[in-house]
Image (cartoon, rainbow, N blue to C red):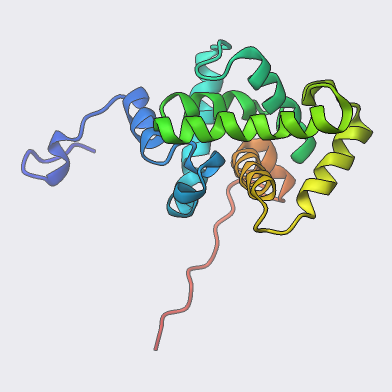
Length: 193
């Protein structure tokens, strides 16, 4: 299918990386941890997650883009505890890459959010989150998730859980877990009378 030179899309020529970068910059990790931007970017996050996850798996790159190793390990452990299977689908790597192209405000919020989990772990058990036993982590996650919704740590928990879940369930494994069989077409909604 060739474009006619007078169509509006004639100037829209971007390679895959540029498209993914622009998508990630526009929506990016907003749903990951930024409370203000999460509402605005929520609807587009799944599409961005799938596209960037595809780029991540094809590139084969395993170097961290934004987080340091300790923060990444904390994110990886938390991701797996929140949504089992997220580690195998490289959700933490995907979120790290999204944060690399996000605004400084969102990047700061992400680091502070991971720091909040660290503080909880150190206050309760005197060790970093990634060193907690499964029982200790589950107890802390339960405590955090049952705090009032106005609590800052609870909001951070909810935002992280949302980002991990959306990223995971936009992957092939996550979609299959939800029952997607591929090649399924849904009937169009009925027309309004």
